[in-house]
Length: 550
Image (cartoon, rainbow, N blue to C red; front, side, top):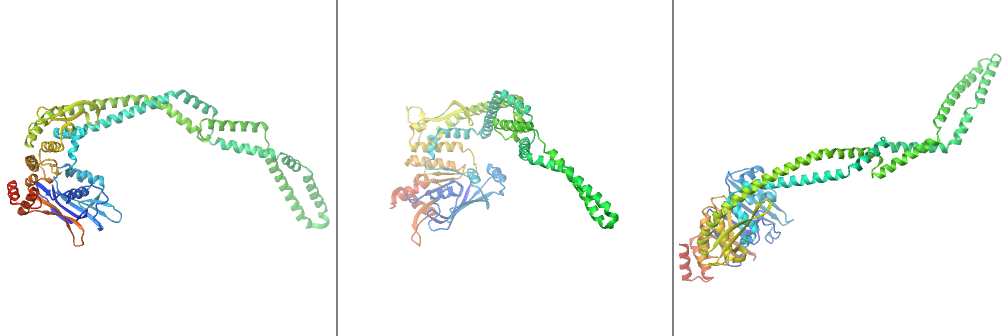
């Protein structure tokens, strides 16, 4: 239930603080004063209204604070608990907007929350029937919602929708697996032949790099062939070695004549002879390593070019050919797996379809059973709403399976005696549609659900005794749920337990502002008299207002 509403700097409201109570709360005011401004602000704090022009002109920050009482065992309590919001017997919803960037921020019990969470919370706090919401009856999809609410089958609907999603996913998975299986099966011969071709080639790791380097080396050796041959000829000459040996021998023959002075020369020549012998061995070793066979170059190039052609054929780098073979092998292995998987998915889909069908038939049965009872209750309510001759009937026809079942639900009616049963939208006026909606709401509100119900000019297009009848039914509805009504009808306003008046005036700085004031008994008498007679309140109007107020 909505306990209080505080509005700061939104639309034409500078500051308003309202306290609502259980029962029927009515809002009235002259035409054009903006009676629906309160609903705009309430819609803002609940996340329904995200207009960018809500901030009052000249204000820096606008804010709405709404305080509700909630039941500890309600669905809302579960949502709050799941969202980590401290649960008490009251909930304070706060939302503001600033002029700097137009950013809107939402809070519940001082915890910042997302807009999606705010909307999820709000739909469990307030139910708004706007000026055009009786048009929801023109949408046949809403008829199923009304009937399902009366049938009290939310748990079955949730289970059926869950089963539908499971069935659709199983169907999708089954079709995907089947398509993949046929795709791989059609490519089986190609995959096997391709794998065999690559395996027969016996690709080695990093083979392209190795072959290319080997080819470069052989070509480099070929270019230096003449130089290598000359080096071999020079280094293999025995003359150098003989000359060094002869010099050493000659020096040794003259040692007795000149003494040890030749020792250094002999030692140096011995070292030179040894180093030359070592150098000769290393050079010859190098020359031997550079020998090549012309056939080896041809064979290397042939394998390199075939390897690259194989990579181009399968549109992969040559170092990915082995990975490609593994992927092809896995695809072929998947054939056997997919065969079994398809059987399993088919079984899952069949079971989900069977369960869905069972739930859909159960829901359909309960809808049919509830439809007759709802028709009787609605027609009983319509008598109180000056539509005693009206016949109301809920028709249920089979339709294609969907998340909400196998039924097409349409409300039909006869609004005039001797008329033809037809769809509501084909035969009902705006005033009649409002009364159909109110009758349904009375029938569907079986107990205090802890939700505030708001009606914005549900009495449009009616007056006199019919408006009085609407007021009486709204009063009855307020015994089960808090009701707030924006009305232009004195008959409806008179049935309220409490009444507020919306007025426009000029502020000290000559700006238009809206004010909302709770009326005491005398003010209420005067307001209803004004609604009856206009700006100039007559004695007769006051008497009529007093009579309406009882």
